[in-house]
Amino acid sequence: MKKKYLAAAVMCAGSLCVPFAATAAASQLKVAGPNILNNGKFDLPAKDNGVATVAAGGSLPGWAVGGIPVGDASGGIQVYPAAQGLQLPPGATEMIKMSYFARGSVTQTVKTTAGWTYLLQWYESGYPNYGPPEFTSIDWTKTVHVIWGGKLVAAPTFNAKANTDADMHWALRQEVLTATSSKTTLEFADATTQTSTGYASIIANVSLAGDAKLYLPTSATLAPTSRLIAVVHTATGYAFTAPGLTVHLYGTWKQKTLSYAPPTVVTKLIGTGAVSGGQAVLRLDIPASAVGKTVAAVAVMSGSGFIPLRHSLTIKVS
Image: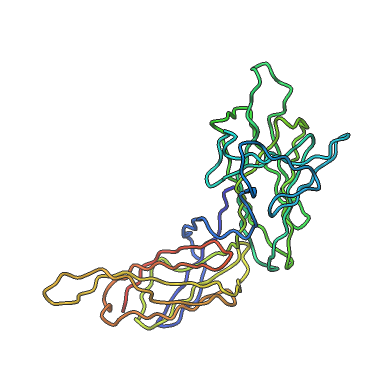
């Protein structure tokens, strides 16, 4: 799911910087980050060449397994390893078929902070089509319910009719979620109308990490020891305060060492600030020799359990 956000920047005058709304959005690229889920890849303690079946009421590392009973069947899931021969999505080592005689679910409770936003990412597909062209009894539209803190937050669908062992047409799904307590339960539940266990929805490689927004200008004129304020919000627009979340600012410029030698390119940490109250104050430490030069800078915001974010800017040293 693609999301668009309003960008912001920072206006600086001397050593004072204040945030203001900007018309051009800075690119916010999501990169692989820390995963606060336990066993988001659905790995099993011991691998084999077969399929592991877990009925409702059972578990696999990190996850509790549930199901919706149909007749005498309690439901459950099946874990398919790479050795089974089905194509896996990027980064995955196992996949979960979301039914076993009846629809199943997987649930995990994680530590969260009320008011923080989290990015949930997972891959979704459906069991391959092995039937002849006239085989029309299967509903190829698969549905997965995503439940966060007891509330349905997403119900994406996937059409698996074109799927084969070699091409599962994996779809990457994303949802930005907000926590309201210190613990939150995440659940994936099959909601496909077709109850046949042979053609179920499939999920793989689930990740959950803190999601924050970093706002800085694209260019600024600053003195070597002035300060720059990075604005940090949750993905839903609230000021962020996160212990351990830090912004590091790195600068690259050409520096002359010896009069008879060509200048060398140096990269140094020129500012660091902890995030508090929706901002990080970066007190610059740029050598006086860089005055009059343009510094290519990269701000990196990171912290335990958060997706790292990068923002590029240029600083003209005055």
